[in-house]
Image (cartoon, rainbow over all chains, first blue to last red; front, side, top):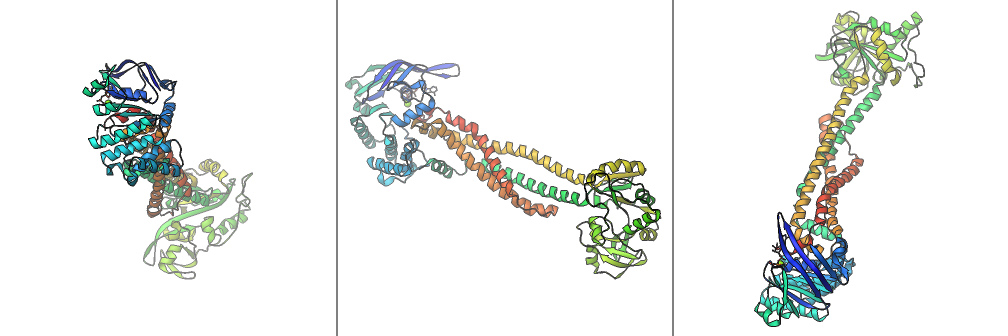
Length: 230
Length: 403
Ligand SMILES: Nc1ncnc2c1ncn2[C@@H]1O[C@H](COP(=O)(O)OP(=O)(O)OP(=O)(O)O)[C@@H](O)[C@H]1O
Ligand SMILES: [Mg+2]
């Protein structure tokens, strides 16, 4: 699904250069559930945005399904995200002025669904995450756990084959975390590729494969035991 | 949900975010529409006046300054009446009529009035017949069908500034004077110690003439003890073409006088309009700049506070075009709304205040609405072009940054 070929990323800030990711080569297979773990500032989010086609690497190539992502135009990459990728954010990133239902409808609007289709599918998805009765609430009227579930429904709206999640449980209490993780397991079972960035060993344990990042390097792949300790 | 719902919901959530932009554009359009309305109608008023006055030329004493055409004969300086004869028999091409005038202050029924002496047409004709002179000739190639007309009646004072008949013991009353004093045809009036008979009340002309009393020039000369003099001679050309040519010929013919065309006099009024118009261009520039800056500023602030939302939209697949359209659509909406409200406001101001201040009737100009709305939309869209573009070029990574 993904193939990173000597990908590195440096941020230029004035005179000094910050290396967020050193030359990395990596393969991610279709249907994999991967956790990226590592200390803060080790370049996890950078890695995720590189995979999502939202941040051009300083060097190297990122292949997605046989296509070199950063040889596409910005618009083509947006289109690719719209059709094939779903994002889950630590801060949910719901649009504050839209209701839960409308938030879920946004990706459907972007792909040009009719109004009635948007409505139907939106309600379906909200039901799926157990929020059918909260369709017309604004994000500010929802608990954090509910907000993340709305965000999950939005992620699923365009039926992506890849889900990229950055600290999806970082802001949730353990109970909510378990709920969200249950959804991830479900996505995984249904054959989606999942890449999740996390600090949380509990989350990392769910993944079939773990990548440890240390100061801009993708280190050894951790055996199950070590991941638990990390 | 569709694209416009998205735009609309965002506006409803933060109605004040674009308020300054909307305000500047509304007030800008209102000011421009008001100015345009007033200049349009005052221009039309002047144009109508100019047309009514035709190709007239004024012969005045040298030292007279011209502020207002209508008071051109109220200056106390005189020229000899003999100039009138000189003009009449000089055979100037295109001269259709002559109207000498002498104005003196008088009292009528305890009321201060201006007594204006005029010379009836019949006297010219009598003299012309007597001297078998060729009075008043059309200029060659004159496009006007009728040159010399002998249409009588008191209406002609308004239209041709002369009357056909007026006897030495008669007086004509302006409509305002007649209304104020209650005098009517056949009544006797005492002016400068002499009793005259009101031979007619003049129809309303809408000029200072409505407040004047007219009598035979020679009667006024005798009563005012001024000798054979006049304050001014109005010359009616047969058409516009001759006015300019007459100016030079008359200057040579009558030394010691000042010869001006009425067009020139009216030009002073026109030039005030011109100034307004130029001012309104300046206003346009300033207001466009201000409204543009207001909208640009609002849009920049809006883009800034929506960075994360924009990043999120892009992460879930919105194209840069979609993002810039979000902002452009908003500014089109604000521009057209500002244009419409501004038009209504400006028209309101012009129709109420404009008519109060200048006495003209100002009616709404629907065409202006089109210009106002299109113009405001254009300015607003152009102003938010760059901020919208910068929004579409935002790095989608901003959605991963905390708050
Ligand atoms: N836009 C940026 N400009 C400059 N430097 C950046 C930028 N984004 C990230 N960095 C730097 O790159 C490095 C990696 O950042 P990144 O956000 O990928 O870390 P992370 O592993 O996601 O950290 P955290 O766990 O705190 O989210 C850090 O040193 C960070 O300071
Ligand atoms: Mg991070």
